[in-house]
Length: 159
Image 1 (cartoon, one colour):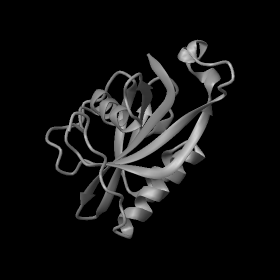
Image 2 (tube, helix red, strand yellow; image 1 turned 30 degrees about the vertical axis):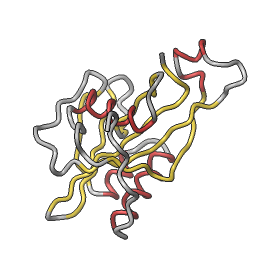
Image 3 (cartoon, helix red, strand yellow; image 1 turned 90 degrees about the horizontal axis):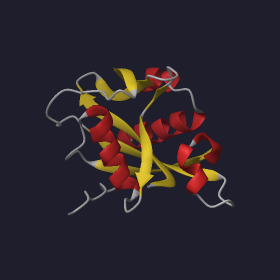
Image 4 (spheres, one colour; image 1 turned 180 degrees about the vertical axis):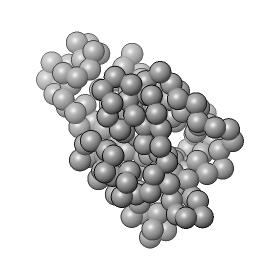
């Protein structure tokens, strides 16, 4: 069952020319975003972040996952599962993460939720994103990487 939480993940790769961030174009509305999806019953937001990354890109099975300070919310009316949530719940919390996929084997395989993906430098990635909270989360990740100040990686489920 879908819980009233969402996980958003910004994949990044270190390249000779600098850090590249993955932005994915949604198939339904054409907006660009990070990996995004719901938290299922029994999952932590970090578990959901890793699962959604695997489902939407084929990456992330063993990649380091970093919880960002950024959180935000979205109105519950946008979720089909909202009918089963408490009446006094109005906002679904969005938890943001960065995932270092430089060493991930294999190529990106997009799910049907997305029609394209691009690896972009920070400024171009921020310009592609529609929502302010996504840009803020990406700013945080980029600033942390530049300062060599990423948090300790989240533990993988089952470890």
